[in-house]
Amino acid sequence: MADEREARLQRLHAIREKGINPYPNNVERTHTIAEVLAHFNEWQGENGDFILTGRLRLIRDMGKAAFAQIEDGTGRMQVFFRINDLGEETYKTLKLLDIGDFISARGYLFTTRTGERTLHVLEYHILAKGLRPLPEKFHGLEDVETRQRKRYLDLIANGEEARTIFVTRSRTISAMRRYLDEHGFIEVETPILQPLYGGATARPFITHHNTLDRDFYMRIAVELYLKRLIVGGFERVYEIGRNFRNEGIDRTHNPEFTMMECYQAYADYNDIMKLVEEMICSIAVEVRGSSRITFQGTEIDLTPPWPRIRLLDAIAEFTGIDVNRFPTRESLAAEMRANGYEADPKLGRGRLIDDLKGIMLRKGIPALRQALFLTDYPIDISPLAKRHTGIPGLTDRFQPFAGGLELGNAFTELNDPLDQRARFEDQMRQLAQGDDEAQVLDEDFLEALEIGMPPTGGLGIGIDRLVMLMADQESIRDVILFPAMRKMANE
RNA sequence: GAGGGCGUAGCUCAGUGGUAGAGCAAACGACUUUUAAUCGUUUGGCCGAGGGUUCGAUCCCCUCCGCCCUCACCA
Image 1 (cartoon, helix red, strand yellow):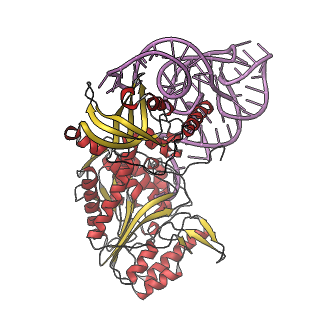
Image 2 (tube, rainbow, N blue to C red; image 1 turned 90 degrees about the vertical axis):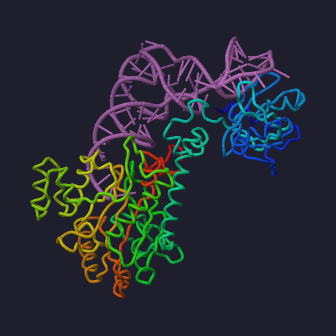
Image 3 (tube, chains in turn yellow, blue; image 1 turned 60 degrees about the vertical axis):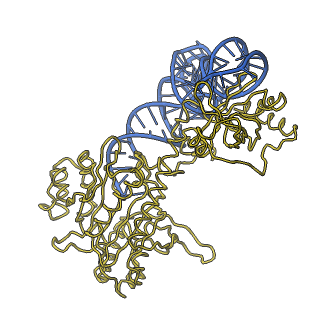
């Protein structure tokens, strides 16, 4: 490695000695590679004059002629150098180029006798010299760790494949934004640094503002701020942005992740279910060209309506435990243990049900791979959701699933300020009992609710997971350009 | 947090209780239509880090670091 870098540095100096700037300020380019390839047949011929730019990916030196491949952001193309056309001196300068260098090449288009569309180069310039070797040309970069730590190498070496994921990500977000814009939502931005964290059950990151000399929390959700805007009279708002949760890292969790939250006044969770299935289906059609997509080998039909399954029914079906028959924490815990599941004695009944949900999701695969809504969650794990109209102890809440991924969370928002206060107080009790993920009481938010919030439906969608679905990726780290990593030894 | 796997040249990978190999990349040479060009020659490694066992360790044992998988936890 040191040797190769040394060799490249020597060539860099040799280029400078020839009076050539290896990092010129100006660049000429008449076409992209994709444009040229698209019009190749009509544009080829010795009268053509094209200037292409790109990174050298391959050099095949034949002595007095050489083939190379250059790659720009739109594609790859072969270029051909010949000593007759360039002159001995200029041709020899090719020796100073390395794979990885950026060049511009001017010439005409022709087809080789093996049918390869090629630029016959009459003039070329170096645009930027690379000092380190690129990953191997055939196998590319396979090492998962390097791919994530040095995403630029992943994008170079694994080309289309790596890039497609992030193009899909971009298209997914813009399709979502378009859908919401077209449905009367306005996009807003709310604080990332919050004096209190709320809107989800998670441990926060804490930071400090020097001038104000106070701590702030990195937001774990935007919920309570968007609801304040509903109180303020906006009827449909959304925000797409980064949330931060100080929790574990795995295939579906990254400490910073992107979430879309939206709130719609005069709506309930049934309206939001319609919104979700319609929105995600429309995103799939835009991004994947169909409402039927393949995820990890399973075909998933996102066409509305998605099945609605009550959470407790799903639990009963896949775990054999009918939660309704065990109204107390103790009886439910005993039943779980009788069925061979762990039941943490410290947890409340709602959290036990949450655990059962996890067991159910694992056991329910592959049936739960399809798009569906699980509905009607227990009240004590849903402190911001409105009580279920019919069934005590439950809320008007649902979660959308597809591909076995929990894509989000939604409910009819609790707009009764006294009930909300009581729920917060209950959470504070759990916090005092050592549940460090319980939600904290937000007096300012309660004051807003007391001003009055209309009936509202709200939704959060995990963008990263949605992108996993759209890009058919099994790990959240594959859809985040620079995922959180442990520090390297030399860091 | 628990268990399992992995870490060897810039990249992709072999390999062995007697201190290392291939292909690509790199260097030198040949070649004026190649396609992962070909052919010849050459260079390249604290075998993740630190301890231990041993006459001797890249290999066996322990600790640590990093990555992956499964489980637990959280979204």
